[in-house]
Length: 83
Image 1 (cartoon, rainbow, N blue to C red):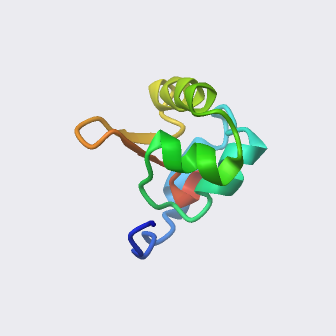
Image 2: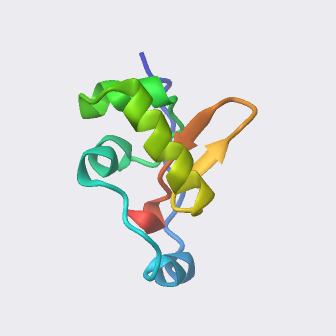
């Protein structure tokens, strides 16, 4: 299902800099809390939401630099500092 990997270490300076940014909706945050790279379909499945709605939200959050987006692999992740 998902490739097991370890999340990166918490960067406290990055977390403090993020404090003023927009927040991730709770259902998406719960599905992304482990900071692993996932496709929009995987995140939608975990959050029990429609994939097209999740993709639109993730793209908007990536534009605001709230979530990270690997364009080449089309995968998203929520950094630990943003949880």
